[in-house]
Image (cartoon, rainbow, N blue to C red; front, side, top):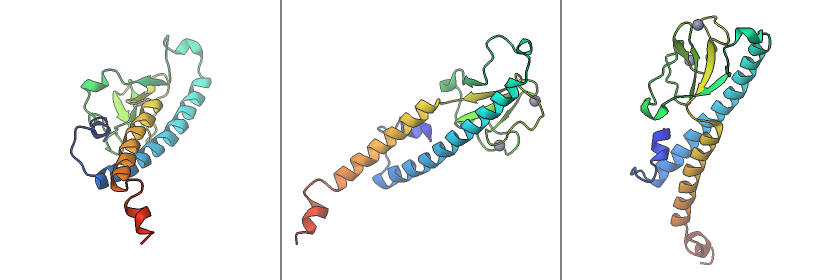
Amino acid sequence: MTENIRNLKLIKIDAASRQVLLQRYTEYANFEFRQRTFMEEEMRTRLSVKDPSELPAGYSIVKAMPNREQVPEDAHQCHYCTDFAYFSLINCTNCNINYCIWHNVHCGCNVPAVQLIYRFSNEELRSLKQIVKLAVKQDRAKAHPAGSSDSSSLNL
Ligand SMILES: [Zn+2]
Ligand SMILES: [Zn+2]
């Protein structure tokens, strides 16, 4: 979905499909934001009871996905629900397992083995939404140019 959005100007889809894309993307992104907030809080709580000496230098509860452009969007599946993890995942380096962020760590491991990996930052997810929103707005402007159609039909 994000690849479609980033290539929105190149792919051939009609106005109705762009509208659907905006709705679906907004839903996904809102779920994602809520779950990120929840999981980050959860990870901070886990971290807060750890002795700093148990943590590797520079450990952070969240890491940006390395080389994401080389990693297909459907490369990561949740070990628990088998859904694809498009926007983010939870990785356990002990077990070499990935989870989606809805499925908290079922292997029983803890930080620092466990880390949140974000393919897109919150800001990027928001700017992707702006791209589709703008395209939908332009579609509407084209369908209803100012002074024509809707407003003039009222004068009949
Ligand atoms: Zn899952
Ligand atoms: Zn584990």
